[in-house]
Image (cartoon, rainbow, N blue to C red):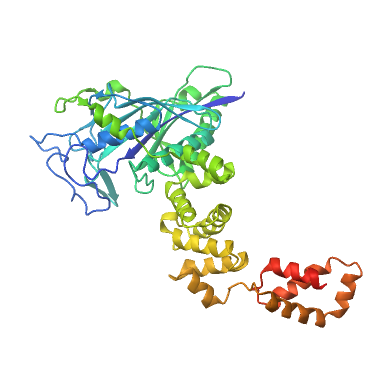
Length: 470
């Protein structure tokens, strides 16, 4: 039997506001445990929440970027549950009237519907050490946007494509750093299967809090295989039930965490301590103005700069990489060489060192200088690679590196002709063979000239002058 995979995703992204959602405590990461707390986020009696307007503004930006409706009026609700990292024993969220609804993101093969994006307060963090556990409430109350899709994706590849697009959009509009390692972009995947051609939605399993694209894909693939095996073995009804599972990246498997609650289990009711959120027209208009998004930037690169679809997609996928590239162009580097030296040479070296473009030892100004030196034939492409290697480990200018390594390209005809004359004089037998029709020997002469010049001779001039001499 052939099966179809059905996937819906819930992404929690921490908003990069300076303070928490309902109090003035800072949201700074990696502080001493329980330092960023106050009576409100500790849920002490008498402390009341006050909405952070910056979180509302960032929600407008997100809604605009994902083609959604931003509701001028939205409300908060209490979701009742108890965990040690939630001192209030409830979470303030938006169930009935979320701030963002009915959006979408287009991926290669389909449109993924975003049902809603709602504001809510994050929980704290449990820290388990040997035989005891501790609770750090620094994160409690940090503003989250939970972005929920319809069950529109049909493979783990589509899920990852959607997540990467969403991640890129969030970074472009600058509402979150979306750092997956620090937990500011976390994904829950809802996975089910059904026989091919069947429209029914079968039992879905939620895989909770996965924090890397690679692990999300592996978790989905494992869960799909587990459900298919259960169906084929005739034990689907007993082994696949509505539950929350965790992904073990070491064993590459999902395992049961708890039964999946329904909305009724949380006893939702309107939050009594907060008024309805009302967005003024002028605020809506101001924060609906968002920067150029990655898809738009990629299309502009293709039409205006004549960059290939693949290269424009690579460069525009990460906002900092696109900014890096555009800075190089503004400083006078050619488009063609900027693309190849950025995507192949610099990114290749960064990948080997496991570095992001934001941590590159070579900034956009130095890369522009390097590319301009190649454009202007001050150095050869081969010399450029040696210079880039040196720049990766040394804080020095491109010009100083060229001088230090002696890699300035020789463009003087007289100097090149002197070398050519010596090569021809020392290889008279091969000269006769070449003139007798052995054309392949031309490469030998080019190699000898480049070797004698220690790679500094301009290859184009070498070819031109050699042909004239031979």
